[in-house]
Image (tube, rainbow, N blue to C red; front, side):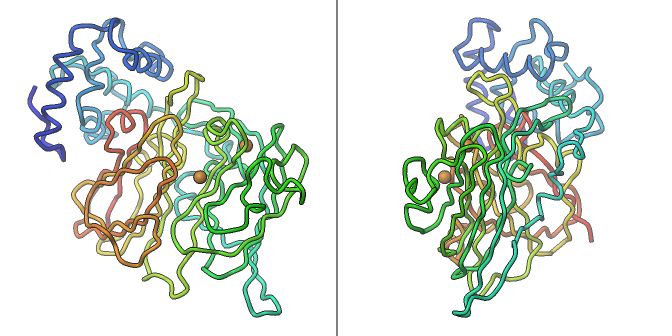
Length: 391
Ligand code: CU
Ligand code: CU
């Protein structure tokens, strides 16, 4: 198998070779992870696209699916892709194509990932007697079924009816007040990353004496703390079992701008997430901002040479790491956004759960540029998209 001419170096090619030889023979007797992959495929591809005996080695061949997607929406409706240039079965291409057919009903969802991308919620502000700014938001936890890929429904738990929840945005030094109302059938909290007293931390058992801690259905609580430190943060429910509460959709971005601000840019938030739709303990759909393949179907429109600033947050549950890779370009990486100096100029970063960063870049050429998780499996299951650069 020839290494694919993408961003993968010699290491990628070697990995695909060894994977292929070790798994190429069997479709049913593979390791445990192989079995779980089959079930993920069945769920979304409905079996038809998978084929009864197609080897699943494509799963282990870096970039195969990505290259299919690069060939793009033009082939999306063509399920008969097998055997057109790659040696192995390539149900992945047919799978990805089938996955992208049809449209998610954004109206029924009540949110559209294209809007979420640039939707920063500054709340309401007023000046306190001390001269400080008080910034305030109302947040309601609601249970809600959402569509995370065409025809794939997920019984989500949401903040303000959307997944991810609102991207709260403040400036360092302000006083923040979040009025939380639990309208869900389940107890929840809001745990903010940042610096604050324990009673404001949104953890069960702590702050119960002032009505905090675990917030039962129908109850309310107001979190109040200072905006610090500046950076790209996040919030999420901290009720137990934690994995379930996060994986259901209770999380969002929390951005604190430095007092002096940052240079003007086309800013966007990308919350990397995933969904375990069949409760088997692994994710069937991966995305940024919830809907798999959304930005394959609706590329992110940007301007040539304009500064782009991405607030990237990894909240993915059930997988140890996630990653972000952009094609044909490099970005400045500001881990956690807590420094005004970038730490690295690169095209790929890896994040563990809860990690986040600010990425800055400009596209010098017009055209379509892919971005995706540099974990092929995630990309094939939805975590990929395009920037469309125009003059
Ligand atoms: Cu919860
Ligand atoms: Cu956290």
